[in-house]
Length: 135
Image (cartoon, rainbow, N blue to C red; front, side, top):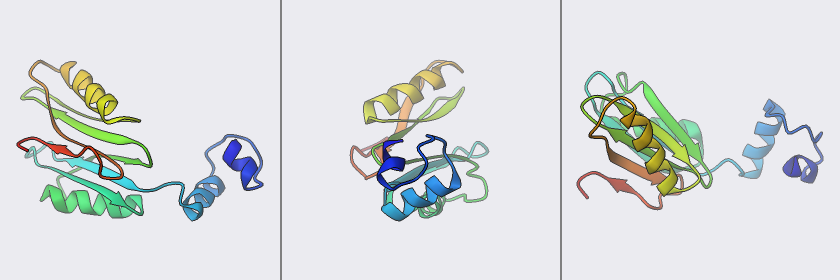
């Protein structure tokens, strides 16, 4: 509503196409990050610091190496962070307003499907706090 007031839109708080267009033009919906995952072959990909969601998704799919199979996707923007947790019994993608929150949420959701969940990848939309298993 504050943003709507600042750009002289009706202060409804509703997520309309007009509001989305205005935010994009103002740069309020960037940077974007995405984590993609293939359930079929357990490949995953990650991207960050893109100007649009479309660019972030495309980059994550390239990083996944199985663009057609990486059908599970989580996109996040601005100050948000995303995380991917996995075990032999389940997986989860989660985004929150902090890297710690995203990691904790992904792990907690993954553990609902079974034990042994670990964070495989996490990053904030701007590229900060990047983590991938093995580094």
